[in-house]
Image 1 (tube, rainbow, N blue to C red):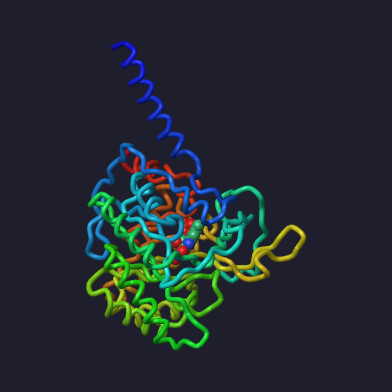
Image 2: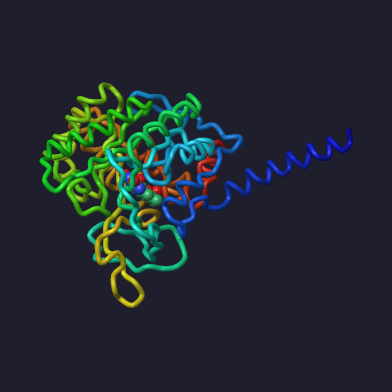
Length: 367
Ligand SMILES: Cc1cc2nc3c(=O)[nH]c(=O)nc-3n(C[C@H](O)[C@H](O)[C@H](O)COP(=O)(O)O)c2cc1C
């Protein structure tokens, strides 16, 4: 009896320790490959999650809080389940394609030394320590659709009903393809994701790490319209989120919103801020190609962009929600996005660095 009590309390203590150590350090190891991290997803944890004061509505769906994880950190369904267990109410499955695509070589995540970025900077220097911002370099890898569809299906089955699953998709341009073929490829991925159980589709129109037009569609409103129209035909009434990059100019934002608003339900901004990445000897990393800087350095620019988009949406009475993404790492940052007009706020970098961050933000809000 005594012995069993002893073992029981040791088990509970070990469990307690496991949960707490699990949450307090990055579970994604940036020194390991994409595949290693794909294969080493943490298990969901059993932990009390503080309540957000009131539910929120995003694209007509109710969520327990505005907190979510954007496309990127969640390499597969197990990663989605882990962050959902840590208080994130909308989890986004990292961008998938209609065919296999390998990941770029390491470094996939290179810390950079930079304060706030606005966009248009020539380059940023690297540093060894992670202090909030890094250059992201994956090239949107994907498994074949059979693999990710089965994984999305299982993930939706295992996710609690009050958590929602978004699947990020991208078309894969081929050298001889027309825009219509690219749109068909986006739409194929979106349809497969919906058939596999996705609650939301997110179309990635901005990836600074690929130089082809599938990474820059948000800068071309009429091409973007062709793609969203095609996706909408294939996904019926499933909410569609467009993920866009940095837009500094309100005329450019107005043109994009005017073109695509009839077919999308929300826009997520800002993917990252693209620039070159400089080594200590002055040469460039990534062969001098641009990479997206993510994390703290993008907060001010992205909040400002969210505010600009919100004003235009109101002036034009467009029916569009906004998701604030970029640089958020505490309750104050989340509140800045909400005040700027976002309905939801997604955290990638800060949540990778400190997986317990959703719990901390919810607990700060509740106190
Ligand atoms: C590890 C990592 C991988 C990412 N991969 C994708 C991706 O596949 N698709 C996408 O739309 N955005 C991707 N992103 C961008 C994020 O969705 C997000 O827009 C960006 O990180 C800004 O948020 P943050 O400052 O909170 O990190 C990635 C970001 C990170 C950090």
